[in-house]
Image 1 (cartoon, rainbow over the protein chains, first blue to last red):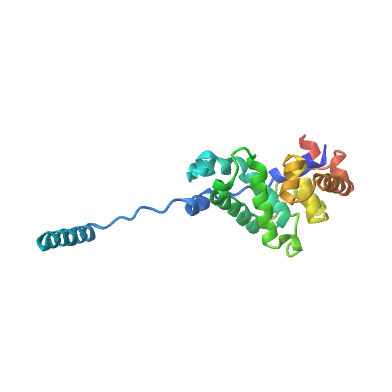
Image 2: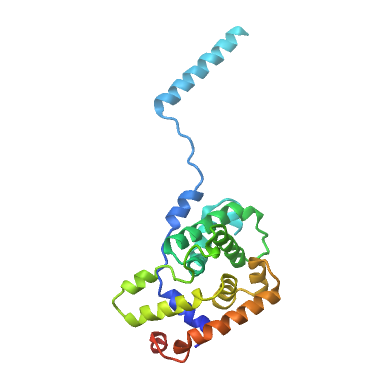
Length: 58
Length: 178
């Protein structure tokens, strides 16, 4: 048996952890920003008011 | 690799499934402690994902990953003797395994033999002979000429042979399994 085979055999006896969930959490793209219902409605209302005011102002 | 370059984590998962065990074992042999080896192996893949756009499409992936892992080992000062190198990550778990005291003895013998090598020789030997990287690839990782790598591998083998003689001759648990 060769030395490298000996080391490889010793290595394979050692359990390898699964850290993929941790890596995936780090590299995952950030989630899109979601506005809650009331906030969305509030912003929409403000935009409508602003637009209406602009129109009136000419 | 193309998918990873485009920022798709699925490409990284493919690399992870293929190379993580090798990177983890290499880091473990270089640094010893299992948690440190885990951290280094994990950081290797996180950095690979970040640096993927700078990786040349024609360049082989394995030496690139090992290079990142090796740099991380250096960055943490692990080669400066601040830890016990050569211990396989999880060797303690192997010792706890009641199956064979003989297997634990074998693990300890391999670890002690590798720990006896200078870090540069150990890295050259592991990368070339155990992980099968070409001399040129190892030279790029260790940032030294190819001739130096050959010399380090040769000297490492010469040092390891007497230390592992009992197992090489066919004694010990590995012989009975093969």
